Length: 400
Image (cartoon, helix red, strand yellow):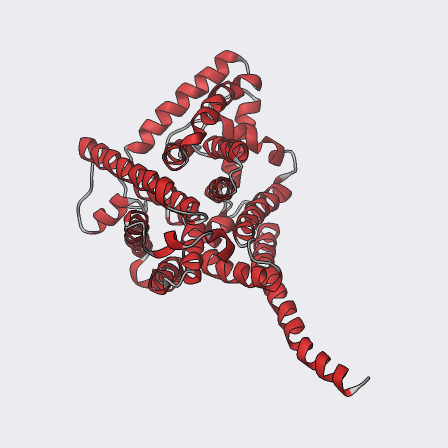
């Protein structure tokens, strides 16, 4: 080997080693937690998990028994029992593992897609950084097998489809989110505000969505479960215990809460304000900032105004915060980038170390407080003068 070729090889080898390191990190950061969770499931199946509740709902559906037994039971639409049916066929342990892994794979895929405008090692680095920011807040929901993780995946993938102008796929994912949880209806309203061209596609999906349970059960039983779902949602809206991390979770920390008409009025006003933010983004923002503003508004609204939002529910918000941090850093809005990163990391990392001091009450106040701050910042970004910041850039997508 000549001296020149030796020099060239010595120059090229460090980047190659660096690329391998980043790829190894990208794999480990997602695989290691899921292997740990799988071992926990095998060692103690049925322990600290919500999956048996979903399995019971499927069995009740198959045997035409009532799905709903109050807020402590199943709190989803009948569609969820149909969707979870294939998992139930796999057996107890395999169901537990694959349910968690499908959520993690979907979350990783969504983040990878948003990092896809860069190529090669730059894309891998972006994915590792965004994953490291996002994953700590996602892990509790993945550990316990909560359906919130799958709802978060559906919304994240819908955001990417909106960013890529894949309207039909986005609509399918939005209706899928509603099948997982009725909270998906709020996501549709905000999607219509941010992407008005969706309206007729969303309307076409309505009869399919409504008719789906009738395809898998006798009409009288399917209708009775619709009525049961409505009554169950009413009961969930009246929950008053200080164990949820919504806006009232924050307020109850200080000895007060919103109830009755006041609660409904605040939810309506907040929903209207976020629709205006999304509408503003539809006219001023470039991609992917527009789709991330939509995702952040949806996730933030669901966290603050779902009366049964738990600490683990924030898996829905985590991808929006992590991707917004990376987007802001790419565009030189470093104060916002560090702020978003600090918000999502403190939400993911602080509750467990502080649990001996505060129990679960720290998360019940901190998570909604951070969500309010996050929504305030992205609303300001969407409504600031059009000749500043990211709007002056020709294509935000090329920076992710």
